[in-house]
Length: 295
Ligand code: GUN
Image 1 (spheres, rainbow, N blue to C red):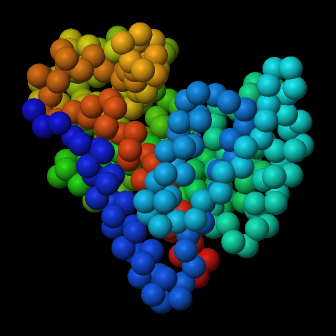
Image 2 (image 1 turned 90 degrees about the horizontal axis):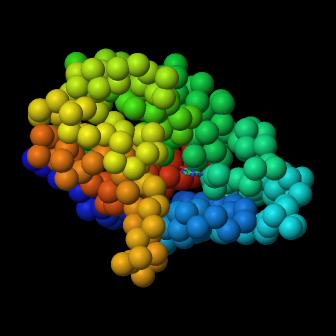
């Protein structure tokens, strides 16, 4: 069984990006600049955004973090967020930006996504980028699926001709990953099945997978009886589970019951240290691309 080390792969890619930024500087080209908007104080979002800012530094990018306060007592006026997005859309120094999700419930997430200029939408969430991706045109790809594809590629795991089963149909992971892997192309050409909460006899489908992707956000959901011998298993889950033995008070738990599933697999991604670091690296690659698009 091969443990797919996303952390090491991500470190390698960040070093490659940093070299490219140095080359750009030597050629008098602009240093990529990523901005992030964080609304409120969701614990997971705080960590993700801090990790994105740290990754920018490692890649030699400029980063800007914009914090907008929102509490149940004093909820953020959505117009303030919209005007911040408008400002970033027009800021010539910012190559790309993200609005960290989830947003407080009173804010219309889809309206926020659609307010972002597609040319700066390095999350790849705007319908223009989603649509371009689905027909195979150049675009910003959603970071987690792009990270998974790159992780498989760098570990010599071929998707062409393989049966991929994805459990989870989110707009951020399941749907875009299915669209990417079913495209024509060397790191695609898979036969993809997307399963979800209304899929009957789930295990009969997951057991047919050469590559099984668990992206439903339910800790330990995929058990050994749902996995074929020799399958590649990609675990996208990152649920915070209370753990009094940790300083943070929680641990990250994947969607796969790792201890029982791993012995059956030819390769598996751990949580943490699998897909998570690759998601951030994909955002860095999108930001680099955004800067290149503006050269
Ligand atoms: N929340 C969870 N994943 C993501 C992501 O990739 N981008 C943004 N903006 N928010 C998220």
